[in-house]
Image (cartoon, rainbow, N blue to C red; front, top):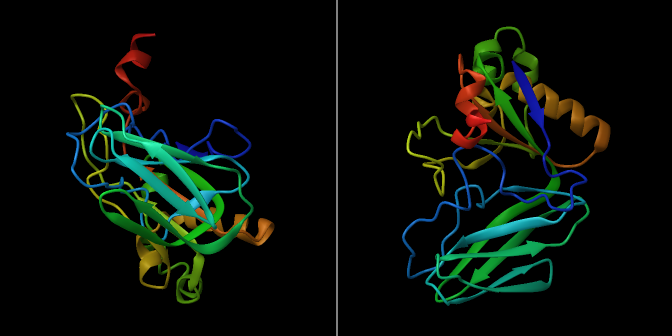
Length: 225
């Protein structure tokens, strides 16, 4: 079973809060004294073009937070739950850019691209990395030097008590001959075709588990319906 999903494209309510199953804004960790960000909002990330994008994080309740991006500043106040969030307006493809968050401390997310973001989920056919097909595609791997195609791999964890506020790991990785060996093979060839057609940065989020049943990707409420 393969699934390519772009939940952000042409959706005015779309945000970076992707339905990864492991990541949910409604689940809140203990509030931190300093502003911090989820794993997905990190160096090298790809933001969806032509759709509003939500940037979020955590800080001390009541703390004022400012987010500076593309010469504009967006402001929020952290709620009692320890969360803050701002909406970036729809943007055209481009980059790289930096994004700076200021509160009691300051964080800068670097090397951000704006393009198309795709969630690549499924079972072993989507999970299979390029390293498994290196003998069949040696030239493709040798030529894989493209910083405008990036992958974020969701780490394999199990959550039996409900959605988690953040992932346990993961980072945005640009395409190099070494890095691409960990990319989803199906996802990478899909990204190559998309970039050739649209000429924009492509971000793929690999969230696939071999042999996983469809029920494992659904919430408890969805299973009850």
